Image (cartoon, rainbow, N blue to C red; front, side, top):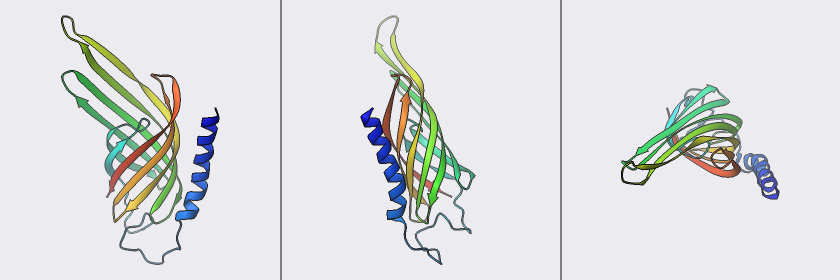
Length: 178
């Protein structure tokens, strides 16, 4: 219980202090490095890669439902003859603060994971199946790199249905906005 309280306190401190530390003076003109707030180039959707227990692993697509609410869908398939993995994750990101190069947001989501592995040969073959849903939420930051690339980092509380436990886990992503 003490570890969860400490993690929640750390997330709150990060959510309050990070915007104050990273905020710079307001710019009258747009710089060459890109800007989330540019009205002439909204950089609406994004395609990239995401890795996490809440949002899924693999190819990711981000789409704005409104300027402050993003839907993210991610997933992947990795199959061999003896090992089959696939997953799909969905997240909603609510932007708390957005300046020219940084977004601070809270997120919530769910992901389905499937893993089937051959553990014994012979007749009949023996397979171990592990599947389940993860749900949770947390806080994240997204940094605009250059004109259209961004890096995403999250700290999420995830309830793993397979093991019936809730843990604080990181998530990362890289995206290209168009």
